Length: 164
Image (cartoon, rainbow, N blue to C red; front, side, top):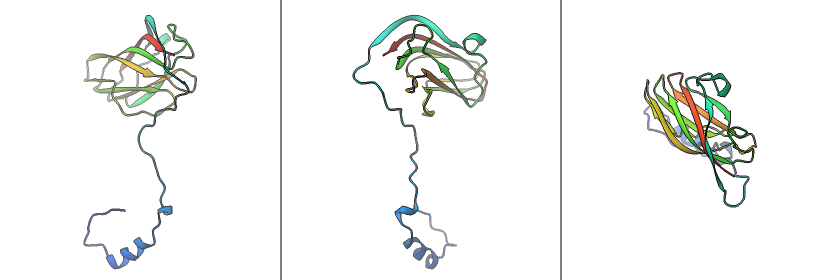
């Protein structure tokens, strides 16, 4: 327990109170991202694919509407473009057509946002990056996208390979 000195504190009251506090009076809370436990054993094999668009929020059949500001959405990568249901991760090109400035964070669909930045952008920019992205370990093939931005932004995901 730590504090900053304040003249309004009465040490005659506080010191005896502090001596009655025990470690069992506290609850441990783990902060930060904890990656999912891998269900695979041994090394993974990389399989190339002809580049193929898995998500495009500009089009309803492949992922529309656009990503909302400061919100996350999960897209399914397996079963599309030759990515099998047993894929653990994908190799992809990620593109953001930004209405507002910020960044996108991509992470397995069954875990929390790690707060990392895959693509950063300013309002009005179109920015792209390549990425190796883990998929959900629960068998859904989900990939979460967090739009950490003030704007409603379009998102495109082109896959070019997978790990199994």
